[in-house]
Length: 329
Image 1 (cartoon, rainbow, N blue to C red):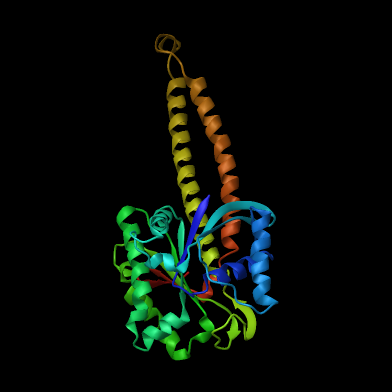
Image 2 (cartoon, rainbow, N blue to C red; image 1 turned 135 degrees about the vertical axis):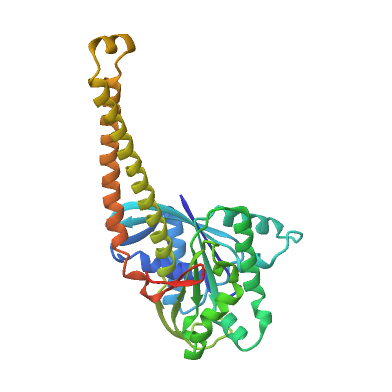
């Protein structure tokens, strides 16, 4: 099962994000739908979203780590399972000597084992930094430290999606400076040769008035809420396609090698075959077995390429970078 880990600053809206994302992806989107593996979790998430969308009440923040297991369906066929881990916001700032020390240890272990990171950063944090309050960057520096620690422990690189939550609060001037903040605080991702792929996408649950209480004042209308998880799926499927093509190339090479060997051995004299043995039947069996496996893998490749192609227009709202350089997608 693939693993997504969602990190974020306190009050960045991680809990609201997963409620809205699941509600959105229960409906067919470009052929995709999500279901929870546990029916009770389905009810829990839907009740959380109903509290926001219908009752007008913000949920409490994440006070403990939560895990959600999902199955991705494409045209009513299951294509992938993934585990989503939502760490409580305060976990990134705890020390290993504090009461919640195990959370800190588990967090780094989970990051090391993840297939993708989704980093939620609230607009209030970014706006405070832009206004000159650099103390608000403390959480971002800690998030960057977690990523650097991952790089120190792993040779592989995983995709990272920055979900810029509460995007309805940004002014046009804020939007122009947003990428500069990300590049400054997460400069390790932008180093040439570091091999990091990351994306930035604005995410919002709607248009809201400022409020310190739990009452929602405004219009609930999620936007781009599915993009972070679909970016992860896109990356995983792209890697699976690459792996299958590589394996198919290897099979083709092996079949050619075996056929050349059969051709050579069929040209030997009967005495040579009797004296040195004849394994052409065994070689032909290998060729037949490879052909069957090749056929099955080609069908898998065809299915994955269809899935992959259905995502091509989803990411126009993102800025995607490789080693800090803007990419076309």
